[in-house]
Length: 436
Image (cartoon, rainbow, N blue to C red; front, side):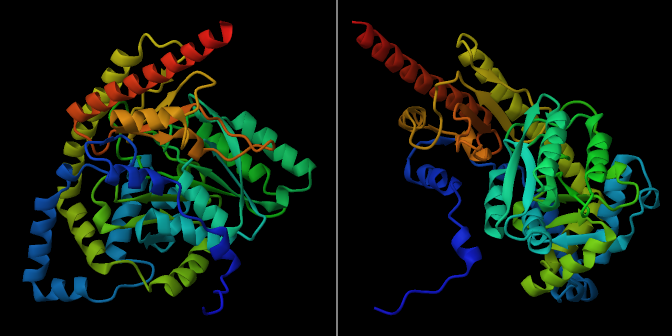
């Protein structure tokens, strides 16, 4: 036997994602309806539009050479210009109004790469990230690799509760730990996993809080807007970045994966100017730049209007799926005391809360009953970080309507209701047995 490998501390801090178990279950169980993974609808991909764009580019020697050659680390200038204009137009400002330039835009291999790069640039082991509770658990894993401590901030119907955030910042300051706080992380549009959106009036206040507590160093807000363009009801809400008028406190990051195609694997970020060089220096070590061909494809889709025409259709597809899920839940669980669910205005997720004392995590009776019935969900406890007692809420679940067809969604919810009914019957039987 050879000697054991000597792994880095970062590697030893990195474990397999807990979602791997649920992916494996979905693969291994015939007939299973997955309402778990946050994947996108394959039938709604803009295949024809992308095929046309690629054909046109390859037919022209000049554009073919440009698309097939290496690009730059920071990304295709034309695409960076388009996304900068896109975000600012949505927010009703010019780039100069919030001190943004083309040089502040970085294109990445999906938004996940930016999340990882920011950890490399900003975080030392023991540093603190404040995040919504619950929050995007895949990013929790990334932060754990960097050695960060994630502290959850409660949410209500308006997203992250800023009074709770302020209390936590004060507590950390009194404990002498404010200097360790590097990021405030929020998925502020149709959040993964809850579907909640940060309220309009909280957005400028969040920037004010970051400024107020930046006493030892600048505390940055990481605005993960991955689902912003997947809105089905109401008007768009101005980004948090809009209120960072000096471009110093807010990192705005999003992706083309959800509104277009994850196969193109391209994200983009608007960064404080003094963060661009450190990020690009490390990104250069990663890849010298993300897929140049994908960037040229996306630039052409935006230029021709094909992207926005696709987005209109995609919103209709997801709106019908969301409505199918909400209708099924209301039908199946209306008579279940203590079962609650949100009504998201966009995104891909519905969050359900069961009565306290109904464990929903991996290995729980509800997971096992649900799999036996032929449906899969994501346990809500994955989105939480343990409190000082090492506990997390264990009676919540996330359902995704991204992949399944409306009829499958309705059947999946019926199966979940049967699983829950089996659990309730078992609990009643256990209580009656104790009484007798």
